[in-house]
Image 1 (cartoon, rainbow, N blue to C red):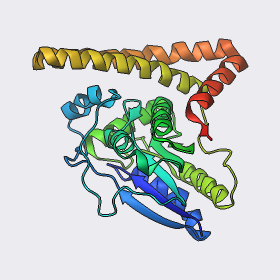
Image 2 (cartoon, rainbow, N blue to C red; image 1 turned 120 degrees about the vertical axis):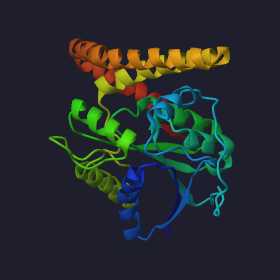
Image 3 (tube, one colour; image 1 turned 45 degrees about the vertical axis):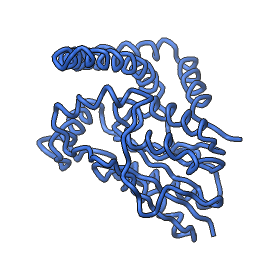
Image 4 (spheres, one colour; image 1 turned 120 degrees about the horizontal axis):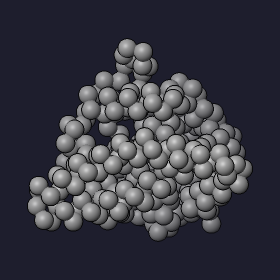
Length: 291
């Protein structure tokens, strides 16, 4: 009988939906699954007050930023024959603070283990997956695989529904907008991935990459890390300076979304197959791990 342990931190419950879709076929095929809830000692709010939503940005993009985790009744130990399923949220193109903290403070949970990471997000998961793969490599993971579930509707629609969900907690359809988050089509795709895992196959459609979005994500991820350092430096000057730097970040984020994506889309169009293969190769080199 094959066994797995699921480490999961989720604010909205969406990540648990995706993880359940992945593990249900494993359970049907005789796997034993145990779940360990990962919780910060001081909870992050949901829905997010807008100041907290943007205020968590500097720490989110700081690779050294950690939070204190609450003790788990089950501990953070894994058995040699357990597959580790790490389910994490993406915050500002980086792994959530509780997920980063888990890997960095409990590397023994991942050492010499097969690790399957599970992500549920709007559409950009690439920079976060690269950071997590690097952390797991440092922790001594034997292999790292990625399962990513996204909101597949048009970007303009998901921008509105996701922001509304995060800031108000309202996920259900409104006006002409549909329900926020990962839809039934993606949950079914993730379930197919679970069936392939249960059959002992390496999934072929676990984390489909969209080269244009990936390129935008990778570029924005670097800019976010640099701007996060700027905001942290401003914070050492005083709260007013930090607030001003965050306002500039928010304004720049809006401009970047409006201008940056079309520019990268044009570059992808001009680059054609060479652009797509280059992005996919870059991702494969930095995310996939096997030894």
